[in-house]
Length: 503
Image 1 (cartoon, rainbow, N blue to C red):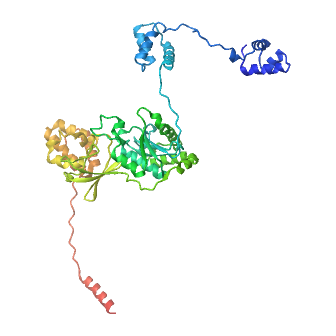
Image 2 (image 1 turned 60 degrees about the vertical axis):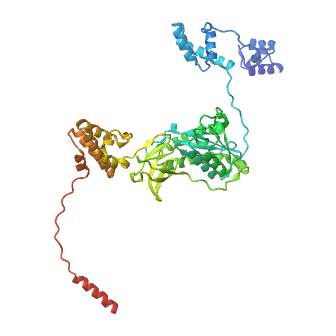
Image 3 (image 1 turned 180 degrees about the vertical axis):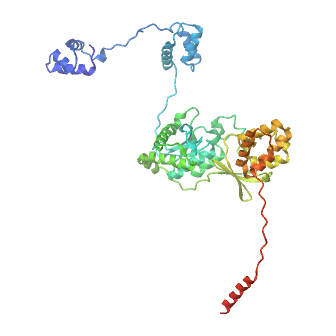
């Protein structure tokens, strides 16, 4: 019978007290005195008697092919055991069973452990008040909705590595504007300024991307001027981690996952992932951050002692640009295009770029507020801005580069397709544009309902039918009998006023 180290120590202790082998065995819950005798004679614990097994209990099914498999792993270390197993089955049909893949996976895993070199995570000593790490992390997996609509977004997350104090802002991209918003919000909330601001390799946000710099390495490109101005404004030193070394930003990287798990727990308690507005959702996130920061106040106090108080005003949460509107009525802002009212064609307008929207100003008046697009070479075409030109030049509709944006909803597309089937191209286009003109004049919902009815009727129809349904002919105004006005009543009123004054 085998025994544990603890049992053997107990029987040795009992034997030293003069107990018999039977008594010691009972005390240690062993069934036989022979076990006591075995370990007395050996003078060793069970763990010390164990010997490493150097033989296999069953033949290795991959012994014949292993040398070839090993060479394949040396040539392409990223090969997976499952891929190798499939290759073996193609080469030796019927030789291997499906259950043997686990054996090959263990052997490949052992080979990697003994032959591959891996990058280690190097623990860092953090100095209080020295670094603020900032990173963008996707929050889409949380399934947040705004008024029932899926809300895709990022969080610009800032963390002090020494105390793990954190703050963040909801954004739609990891742009310089987003990083500026997140950083400034964290500094204002903190009220103090660390020495260094550290980011990952967000080249588009912090580094030069001009044509002359694109072929250079990250270090050679250097920081872009606007980011350096931001750092100079707060008196902070910019720093980025090395390429392929996310562990250098490890605190904020691990903080991203921990924060999202905490948010998910609070969402479960809340019972809903839907919010009325972006502002309500962001307030919810700040509440989670405040609760997590409450346990970090002691170490945060050590950091604050080493920081400078925030003594400058934050920059505005937007960028201001001056842009000329093109002949097509499209305003190009940060590599994306937006249509504006046609009267601004050729004019230079002021554009205020915020994280979620842009404002177009002309002659000190705000002309338009448009949702801001991310990425490059994207276009936001508002049919209301171009419909007048299209009605005057209907031939430009069919091959219009942005024609897909001229269907406000699916029913408008079906209406144009129906018109196109029964009319000549010119008549179909002109009829549709007249209908779109009605929608632009403020009747879009009514026009859509009218189109649904007409399409379901199966009869031929035109823009005149839509107009009758959207703007019904008013009933005739009844004739009114003219009234005779008696001005003597007014004279009596004036007389009474004069008498009152004279008294």
